Image (cartoon, rainbow, N blue to C red; front, side, top):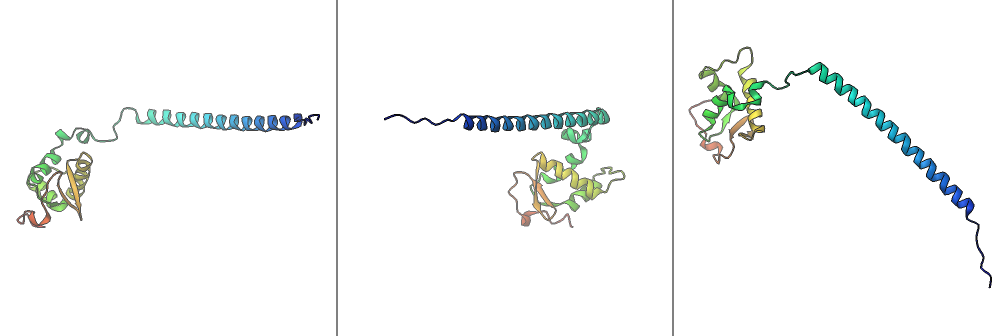
Length: 147
């Protein structure tokens, strides 16, 4: 019995054509990515020139140990109680903290957010805060501070 062979040359030509088209598409994708990277590098270079060495975060927040409002708030929060932001702001005012033109409530809230990010305090909801690790409940909060 004689073996019958099939001519696969046309099939191979078609596969080569498809693979070449796929390769060309990948080259276009790579060229587009190279262009995108170049554009991003250009924007970054302009941004770095524009910002220079200016800090996006005030130095006092970069070094929380030298942040006087943080220290005042920690003094009160050390008792382990749950304190409202308003009570903490009033306490800071009574302690003589100079808020300048800033709203005491907003400045206190911003500082508490920063302290929470540094894992120093915990928001317990409804604008109330406690020192991280404290097991006190709201019932144990000092009553004399008034809200």
